[in-house]
Image (cartoon, rainbow, N blue to C red; front, side):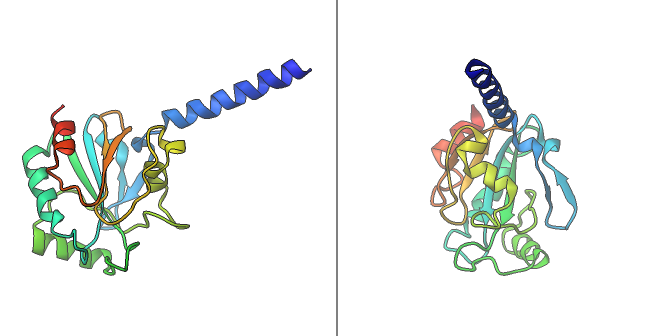
Length: 180
């Protein structure tokens, strides 16, 4: 009887671990800044840089660098996704329409922007719960420390690394990952 319980427990744990390992970015659906559904599986085969952004932050000028990075590498094999969040000192207080206007008029942002979400706390968006937890993504614990934290996602939709908010978009770590 003990052997049977052990075997069943082992099978259940293995199945749970396998299910977690198979989860990828492509399993999530989000909403774009215009309020339309955005299926992340539409990005299969691309490297994806996921960034939580804010318009009233000391790092806000990174929008220009992110756009430059997108212009240089964006297209068939690379995309940047911006996720506005108001989790840090209310540095993203605007509506989605206001954020979109700010990004386009001030920084000429052309990379895809998503609807404002929460990237930490009790109301954390499920995508960010996955991005920030090794238990869910299988790679790294990387709670969002501030605006402009960057997550590197490979062509299979798996987290491979992250860069701190102060790391600029053209940091060697990010460029070598894109060019690899």
